[in-house]
Length: 343
Figure (cartoon, rainbow, N blue to C red):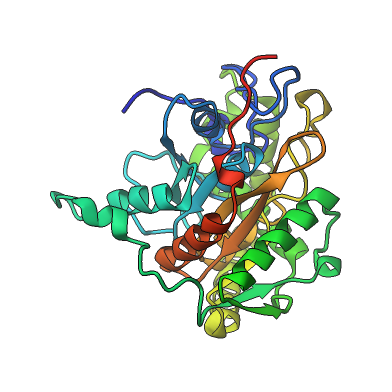
């Protein structure tokens, strides 16, 4: 361990801001302060700036993948329950997960293997061969949602980046199926946000109510939203979560992964942030459906800010996603670029 990194208070925020301890600046613009993405903001900035080769984050609604997307990194959201969460402050335990932030899918595979190994297990060079089977993507099926069905405005550079990544997967042998999932992204966004708030209130309400405790006002507001969730509503949200998991697994039965944007737009300037909004419109799908997900660098916009594509998979299929990511990255170079750290 090299050191501790910054994060959003209670890991409850997608922009990466921290009013009390400071917000790490996105290293992809040395002259203007852009959002780093959150909640695992410091982890992504440390990797992107070259301070460390890899870092760990938590992901309840996108907190590994959003900062990875904003900082042109690879971010793996592991299936909830894949590893022991002891010692990690919970936000919404049924949605919480852990994952690595790295430059490449190959590096993420090594960390994934280390994070999920048995206690006392000795890891050898086989970790480096986790994805090396030489088969490309032959026989794999990748679901892709048509642009016009995204349910939210998506920046042109993001749409083009996702299309390019789909084309790379097709070149590598994947079968592309253009089909919309049988789930509403708007409903997922609303229900998952409400469940997160309800869980946060139940777990940390005493801190939220203590107005002598220094707390980011936006984080406090998000948690206070959970106070109004009744037990009946809470149970209905849990039932909706379970139903979405069943629907997702049935729809994914003939697919190896589903590709879409990680975030709808590139990292905004900190001065332009709307803290009442969230960049997690697409990332919450994986948490709500119980799957795993992998954010991949997919290019840059005209202002040289990173674009990202996301693979969402079935529960426990991290290796499959990492295989797809590794093959795509063997055909692209976006993951190999580094920011200029001086103006």
